[in-house]
Length: 309
Image (cartoon, rainbow, N blue to C red; front, top):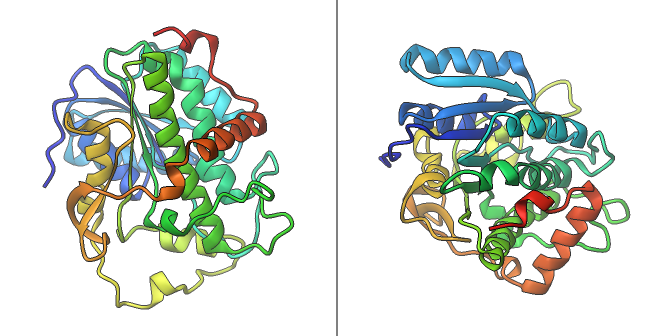
């Protein structure tokens, strides 16, 4: 069991904090002494998760705030609230949607997975940089997926408007993009001399509602998919599955631009280890191009306040 180092005096933002790996990350960060801002799309669900955590950790310092990563206006409003509160020690980009059966769009017209899983977190990360850089040792930990290994960045059709939409291929593209965000942010931090650690993680096959929630979007009842109907793959509970993300977010041994995941059974289960980053996330030209595309699409760029070391 990974032990989160003492987080007393630190402030963390965790997206997707009301369930699954997000809720577990909140629980363990708060248990280690952090003040945690639970960033959720539905505040009622966030309040319920907060109450459950307080039931086992009465001293937890938690607050629930709304953010919808599929709405850039919501991201801007949330970030403004965080910036008004002073330095931010940790941003955990955990929230995501997985494999909706048909092509859906965000409030800004982006394909839902590319928009929610990548463009929203990209905009949030850049908007929070002034607060992060005001902290003594800031960190950004972003959740990716093993599916990133078969992802492709389709620069000619990032939103799946002309090619046939594929739920899993779209998901893989968004999760590869998250790894590129991690690697490129680490490169930017190095170039600018920022004391900012950018890392990534994946949970292997951790049983949460992610496998069913996305596949059920737009349907009257949950869809049966390979992952939620065929019980042949090794799987693990959320306590173990969250550990790579917690390691990426808090371990003193985590490295800039590094990627962490389970160590056993094809990277699906087990204790945390260093995971292999797909070659496609290590191409400087591709990473620079995607960053520029994300800036153009979101209208969010590196803020002037974040240019100074």
